[in-house]
Image (cartoon, rainbow, N blue to C red; front, side):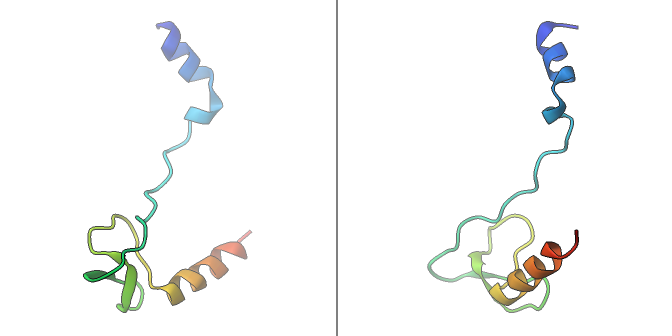
Length: 69
């Protein structure tokens, strides 16, 4: 095993899966992506990867995850 592989194997920070994709920045105009929860238009473009939610569903999801500890 080379030195780089040993360093990676000993580094606990690299043992985790990468973070999920973060939605791209909000766009100024249409076409907007539909919310995956309720189907309303979001503030994100249709090419935004990952889960996109409308502002209401984003707020509700933040409430759910904040109290899940």
